[in-house]
Image (cartoon, rainbow, N blue to C red; front, side):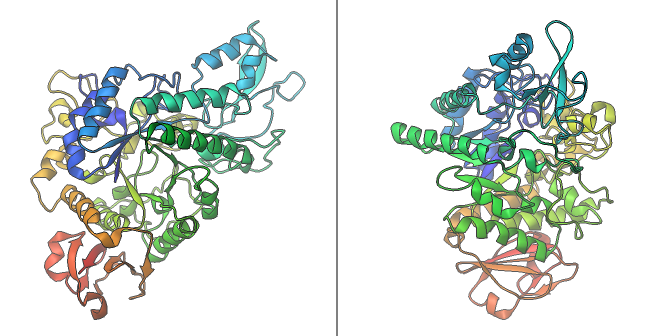
Length: 550
């Protein structure tokens, strides 16, 4: 199990209201107690933080807000003592508009070699006043931004398929892949065990940069700058580098792709194969409605693609870009949402029953943890944190909110600083005691009821469920390998076998009787709702998951 840490929101060691590396270091015993084998850090490189680290100015250092290289090195070493590997985030599609390369390109002017590292183009119209094409950015608005030239005149346009503050790099220029080669080796040499590569589907662009010619839904990218063959040239280069590094240094570092392919599950195989990434996230469950048929399709789509190559998916229900599962599953339309083609950036606006959502999230987690492959848990989901939906607009920092003109609330609600203590002091233990600055995003008044301290003393809490499930998952040899056999035991129910273990997920609104044949020779080893454990021997209550094993 890999535990995702959004550095800014995890733990603040110095009272400035921002999470940092020393804060993570102080919470390593907590992470180890969850059963984590690895930690994935969201970007912690120097950045103006306009997209909280996904706009990088220096790929070879640590942002002073988060610490120093020395603290990072110590975190790697301390984590290793707990048997935890450290993974980092790498952002290859774009850098910050404050990156030295981009500042050099602005100063150098049209036609300069410095501009060839990016996608600078002349505009259309009589005086170049129109963008080079009609592409829209993922986070809203045009994908093109016009610059003012060194002489003060309106000039060329540059491409940024996310925001104007994140200019796309042109990987055809030799400086770009060479810089990332050095960057990967730099961090591997410091003990990093792998990278999660951000937005890998965006790396190549269609030759000639033609118009798209049709409206693209907010939060999605045009086919003209997604899944382009040029991107795979870069990933094959990275894989060769990693294989060489592992062979030379007797290491086992890996590459993990963030490749959003929910619209086309078969496309995942283009990224995860022996020549490119070792693994990729399986995002289908983050958009699947709370229905057995949707879950089965999401699981089959992913496994069918990867099992042919003997590869493992990386399952997840939560991350820093999607609405937290407690809220997602608690929405009134949770059973009706389309399971493919939706944008994670624009969630439903239906009413939320948080108690129902938490019950479903517990069941969903137990089902996911039984699937073939690895799992990624996002910090705070083990506390049952909901999405914070009522943030005032003036405190929202996600560029999605600003770029949509406030129409889309953005992703701040899943990034609220974690509560560690019941007491509100130090923002519920996020910061070190009284006198600390307010956290970078405000916590709800009742945040303490979800704190690690509050849940620690309740053995039936979701925190204990996560710990128990991860521990049992590690011990059950039946859950190893890629085998999975479906059992059809009733309408609307998901049941599958992993070896001699059987998992039953009941996402319906009524109880389910388990067939005697599945119960024979097996006992209940885990149930998502321990308050019903006494009756779950032959019955799976609504919105509950149960594991059976010999």
